[in-house]
Image (tube, rainbow, N blue to C red; front, side, top):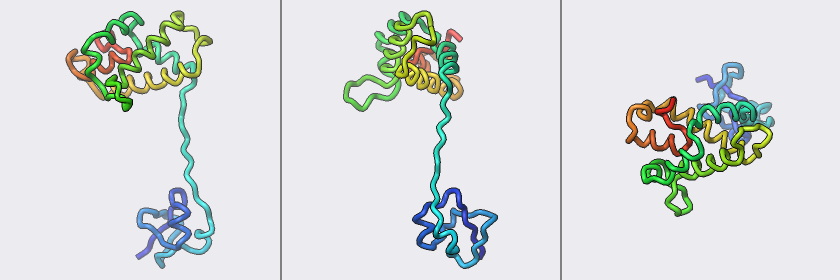
Length: 168
């Protein structure tokens, strides 16, 4: 049986002991003995994670497109019972959902910068704006229920994140 070594994903531990895990195959480096050649045993392999981060200008643009509720509309929504029952609860024992907390942060961002001046946002604002954009885009792509059923958790959750699907 012929095996092949994958250099890009093999950990130093699995290479160093001369064993070849079946999942580590590559068409360029045939190994017919089941052991990794000495040259590979001496190499160090690592993986690098590249995190793609949108630039702030794009984040501002998408945030302002997706957050289609005003600060006062969102504040009024968050006061209601419907907003409290949708989404995942935070781990701090408060009973508040992650989306409800996000809505409060969105209100702060909107109130602090009503003219949406890019120079007025702080790094903390950008971090939360990125979360909002990511959440809204992901859920709008996955959940048609939000537009069809105002009683669905999808609809309520998106409103907690500042997006009213009925306004789109």
